[in-house]
Amino acid sequence: MGLPSDLFVTAFRAHRLGLIFTVIMAIMVYFATLATAAQTSLMGATTGWSQNLQGRMTVELPPPANDTEKGKAERLLKAMTALRSLPEIADATPVSEADTSRLLKPWIDDPAILRALPLPTLIDVQTAQGQKLEAETLRQKLAPIVSDVRIESHADGMERILNLIRCLSVLAGLMAALTGVALIIAICLICRTALAVQHETVELLHLMGATNGAIAQQFQNHARRLALPAAAVGFGLAVLTIFLLASYFGSLLDRPLALSANWLTLGIVTVLTPMAAIAIAVISARLFVTGLLRRLP
Amino acid sequence: MLVTFDHVHLRYGQSRPVLTDINLAIPEGSFHFLTGPSGAGKSSLLRLIYRADKPTEGRVTLFGEDLSALKHGTLPVLRRRLGVVFQDFRLIPHLTALENAALPLRLAGMKEDQTRQYVIELLHWVGLGGRIDALPSALSGGEQQCVAIARAIVNKPRLLLADEPTGNVDDESALKLLHLFNELNKMGTAVLIATHQKALVERLSHPALHLKQGHLLSTLTEAA
Image (cartoon, rainbow over the protein chains, first blue to last red):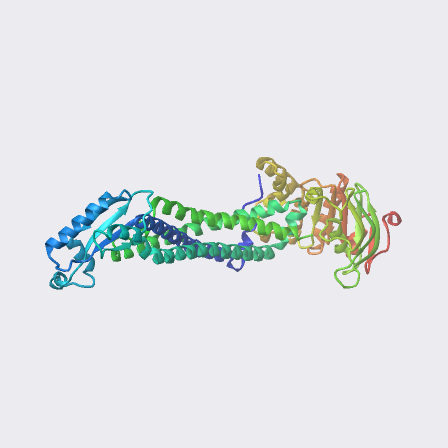
């Protein structure tokens, strides 16, 4: 049989400390959950996109001087034969004119203009697993067949965007960590005030032979009781926000950003965040109160 | 000896000394009053015994342990053999009389049914049998002090310290409390009561230690 669970209830009711604790906890869990979800999504997105773009290139065959369909077809056939003969190439697929037009549609919407333009013939190339093939190397290998061939490596073009997303991901992680630090500071201040409010109870318990651990346990339990519903509220609101953002961006993009990440990983990380926040609240309450009690005579 | 003071001095910061060269010894089962006007240092002397303060100079021992050189974890054990009663009762306002009095036993880990049974008996003994579920706010000053005494003695302490225990109660309640302290002493608990009420001291024929401006004027031996 331990001490009554509501021994320090007065301290947490005074100056609405319990309410402040709950509100701060809910806000921190909300932001931390959003930050960790963002971090996980962005990390997943960069990993997925990196893997997708790895070894992917586009071979551009400029239209021949005579620009006839026959001339184009001959150049394409030669290029495809050369590409398929290379052991580093796993797959080479010509991009249809319809697909090329679709790619250009955001800029040129008029089919008549598109037909009039001397568009290059495109071939999507995927290098074989474990094979490293630079764009310039491939260009040199194709140059004897199609002298004016151009090669575009997808990874090169996307690298800066991927780096930007990686930076955002690190920032999101940092935000989650700072939220944790802010939570610790807030809890320490609340516990200090609560101890000051009920210092006579603390002195009394000490006189009865209570150890610092037994008194700190009271604060720890109280912190847990306040943190649980607060974390649930913060988490619930964060999940709602994530779904709203996902559906909003889902309508703007072909694929919502969150969907780029592994849903299972995202779910686990998101659920772990409020649990970690509760653990932080409980542990910091205990450690801080124990530290303060040690300074008493 | 339960308590010894060996050339003890106490001063808070740079202020004038609160206690000067105190030497005393309190034996097992004794009953003493600690008298003196307000500000003489009575409460400070008691605070040194339950180690709310440490002496600036000198040595205080409690149950044979030097209070300035306690090993980690020893103080709570020593304090469990000590009962303290304050003038302002220091009851926890949202706990009932029973819950307040049971606190030391709950701290010691006693089982709920045993605790309840024992504390109810004790509250009957201090005359509060009918008010066990009352909150402190519903009790008179005298009744609140009875709860505080029950809480102080529930652990069967070897030494009971009382700091102006009758300061906030009427004369009738003060007499009743004094009677309780006397009964407790007869059962073997040493009692040290700090009070400035001379009338109270004169009611019982127990030795008195007198403090004046931080100096102990009569020692235990002299008083006896």
